[in-house]
Image (cartoon, rainbow over all chains, first blue to last red; front, side):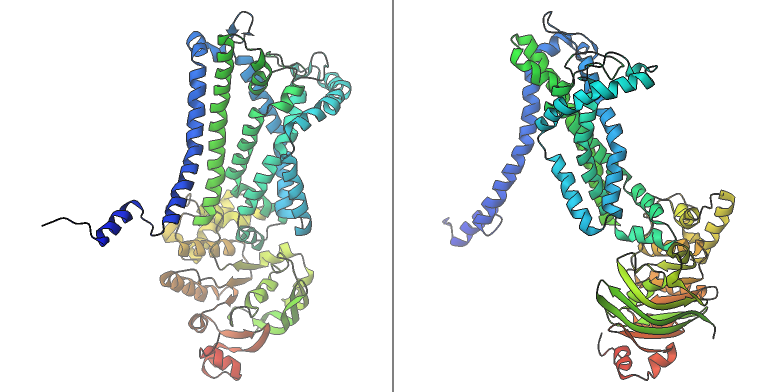
Length: 322
Length: 249
């Protein structure tokens, strides 16, 4: 039996590799798939590059890098504890201040505001989130910091100076300024996501509460309880934004690697260290330590954001299944 | 026949759009009134006027609705809704609450915190809604983790816990399977001893099975209101007849 490729078999052969009948669709599918994959690869690649770049510093300092509080480029000793401390504390405090405001605004937008007011207000909130951070920084330097120096810090040390958090010289530049500016920056993010999460709670939930004789306030509380996990997710997204924030923080935080209980003292964050010191990092070890810092920030950010997204998504899914 | 709710010249609007025209009807006490009619005829709007949920979605009303002789359009809607409960089309238990807490929700909203008081009420209401035997061992489970039919009976139990006088049901079985539907219908039959029930339904057999009186709505008006038997066997209006015979709608 001689073997010849019939037209039909040729088609089958093509079909195996091009499952869709339409070649254009096939290329389109695979091409977009490739693009999607490239995002994923990029993240892996970045992680890998940072890991490679920080090897020297990792080998020399090991775990000490995270717990040693001395950051001394002259002696080539790199301990990132004060920097990690400054990053976490500034972000956490900002979140603590921002959260009640954000939830308040989001509840107003989602539950109370009439539609004609809700639209423009929501738009404004999203607009705030889009302002370049250097502008916040500039505003911080020229408005916020002088105000903190002349009014806020003297007032706080006068009234609450018995607490260790409010002692020291009122420089203006310092942890407090960074916290306040981060608060303003995370507020629109947490607000707009919380608003979306609240809006994803179906109207039937509010009606169920109202029909039982709930007041508007009581039905809102029930909605907030339903939206708990989503609000937590929004908060964590805000946290992810805050710990990675570079420009505005660098401009007002004072830039000194220091662990101090006082909010008036200067501090440092991972992102600002990297931005500030990269240009001066002449030695290999210095560079490697900065890259390791970046790796730590990278891992924390990815972890926080992933968790946050999962929480927000789980919220959406919950309502689609019930 | 004792009258529970007397509706007089009710008009309902969405914005400027008039959806109910001059509705007048006397709803008898401790009976089941079924509201039937094609989609968009104003059935749901009508019962949502009775507990003033119509206003929640931005609607407005004109006219009088007398509940035991008192005009409910002039009372506090929050207080009113404790007397006039509602069961919705799609079961809507609170997913963040347990089965127990779902039933207790209305009591807690009213400031009842004493567990000794709440527990027997929850049990009574779950028994009344024929759900007790199915959930008594899993009262801590989330209210969203039971079947759709069970969820709807949970919603009925939740409504009963507030001890209303009137229960409004907006197509309570339309999202349920036939077995669950039967259970809900049996339940309605049980409940009318103690409550005045107004049920909106798309299903004419259901209306015929559960109700004592039936009102046929069309284009925002009441076309005919009478005893259920009369409406389904010898309606006096041509349109009603066409509708119950399945000629339109």
